[in-house]
Image (cartoon, rainbow, N blue to C red; front, side, top):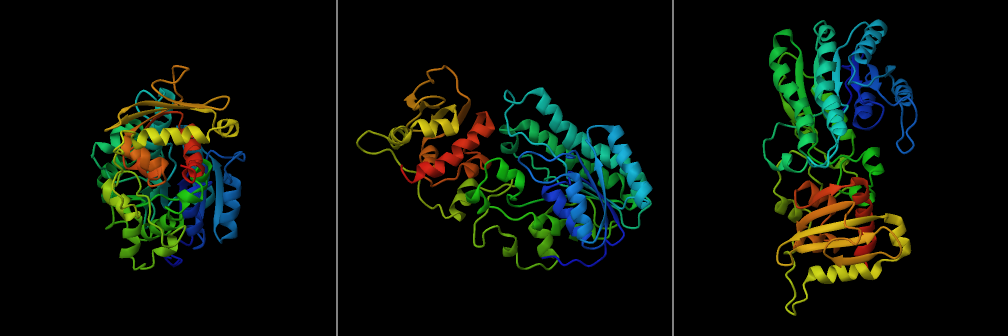
Amino acid sequence: MAANTGKLAGKTLFITGASRGIGKYIAMKAARDGANVVIAAKTADPHPKLPGTIYTAAKEVEEAGGKSLPCIVDIRYEDQVQKAVDETVKKFGGIDILVNNASAISLTGTQQTPMKKFDLMMGVNARGTYLCSKVCIPYLMKSENPHILNLSPPLNMNPKWFTNHVAYTMAKYGMSMCVLGMSGELQSHGIAVNALWPRTAIYTAAMKMLGGGDDIAKSCRKPEIMADAAYVILNKDSKTFTGHFCIDDTILKEAGVTDLEQYSCVPGSTFLPDFFLDVDPDSVEASSGDETQPPKPSVDGEGLTVRTFQSIEKILNEDVVKSVGGVFAFHLTGDDAGEWFVDMASGGGSVGKGVPPSGKADVTMTMKDTDFVKMFSGQMKPTMALMTGKLKIKGDMPLAIKLEKLMGQMTAKL
């Protein structure tokens, strides 16, 4: 891994969303140098499903060799940000580095995104990043090597990154636009403003909570890769390295890190590409070991789509239905185009063509018939299908994740 050099010793980092996940890993990396780390996040009380609070993270920073300051901060509110910054300056004498890590996500379409959720994403991602930068800049100007690092993607205008979740993309790109604008604005003051984004999916406690089990972990890298990449960036000369949209493994390779396999959750695996980085879906599947051609309808006139739904129906029972508890609609295109449903809301469940008996579905999935067959036969991971645009989901996302977990049990029986 990128070795600690001690160059951040005595430096003060203000990190948003650092109570867990990538933000905490960046905090811990800096702490090993002997840095002062401000844990600026909302989690003061333990989450029922996610480990870590600002206080447990601060304790870990201290144990790693750094000094810490836990601050309860909702970065949507200026008074809370200002108070945390004032406390930081009072305790540590200034701010050298700002890491805008806090982010909100909802991968939903326009009709499925309540304005409350839209406001949350815009408030945390775009406005929160702008606000924290604005409040910290006066102190960054006094630092010897000041950095602002936003955990945000390159500005990619490929329509596919807007089509399925335009609100999230707008909010996330707001963070990246801060990099684009502020890097130029602040260059004369010697303040570096850069972005960092992972090339692959990163496995964190939050992903695990959302249903990503061992099967998903096999396709992810560890959060340490982001912490190491951030460390490399934050040690660069702020006067000369600014305005860059960095990708984690590229930065590490340029820094001389040759063994990237150490960051794999499961060595030898092929990774899921992260959002906003263009990868041809077909080439991704091929690299994942899926080189089979899409299945064709059988010659006897009974298509594979029909047989797949028949197989699903055979394995439904009260226990399976109880474990899921929802109604799924499938809008399929291709040779076996049509509307189908799988009702797992009550009783022993049911499968059929057309609309569900209740008249509505909790989750609607849209995809090609051949991709549907591949997904339910275990040849294509639902997460891969979603991230590459082959699957569109509307409705209850946590319920959709329940179905994905159930697919692992179905595959052996279909």
